[in-house]
Image 1 (cartoon, rainbow, N blue to C red):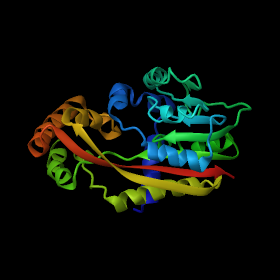
Image 2 (cartoon, rainbow, N blue to C red; image 1 turned 120 degrees about the horizontal axis):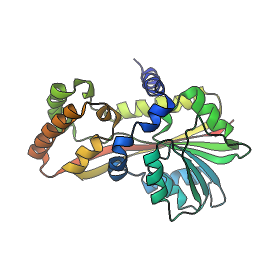
Image 3 (spheres, one colour; image 1 turned 90 degrees about the horizontal axis):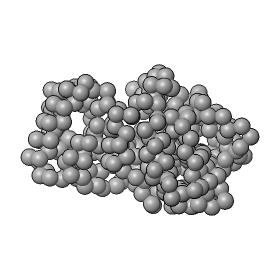
Image 4 (cartoon, helix red, strand yellow; image 1 turned 45 degrees about the vertical axis):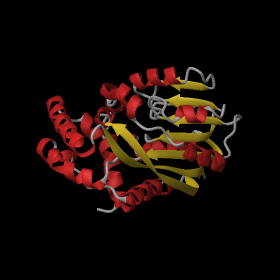
Length: 278
């Protein structure tokens, strides 16, 4: 299956859940998500701001702000941000982290339910969230929320990965406890293919033009507890039976300690994709 078809299939799986199911999906891991998911590097934010021409006078709609991971980076501009988020736990966390930014308004709703009325924004931002929304809703609703030539800005933080040798060493543990979680190592070519496919979906909507993108490889170092907590924020882990998750985590901890000691070296790709409303 080609990357575009795979991405479409994955999005269809997410979108098959009701809005209510999607809005509660991360509730069990909301605080862990806020504590361990990486932010978006300043280099990425700077590139997006420079290319889009966003200023303190701009307005932005953020779709699926989560616990405010990307919100605070753009709030520093001083521009008005309406950050919509359907998950109640995420809304509370986002409100807390954005307290010092009076220019940010957190609204508990989904893009499907959002009614912008007469307001049109200079940018619509979605940070690792747009794949949760059916594309037949996501792209028209985003385009309809933008001023003429306004920007759709998609940010992506791919999953954090340990070194290839560590990944291979852990595969037997995944096979034993949760074979559905076993996945190939995503090398640079694979990640590039996934990001290209996501970008193609934007252009396939025929609602945007002038696509631009950029990406960076980020190195990180987490202690084992934080890494294992991070894993529990990914959707495949969230779907596991609690007993299976506990057994899997226990064996992963033991193996990682034998390989790396107290900390795990990780890498992930961070990227942006931008296009203007037709």
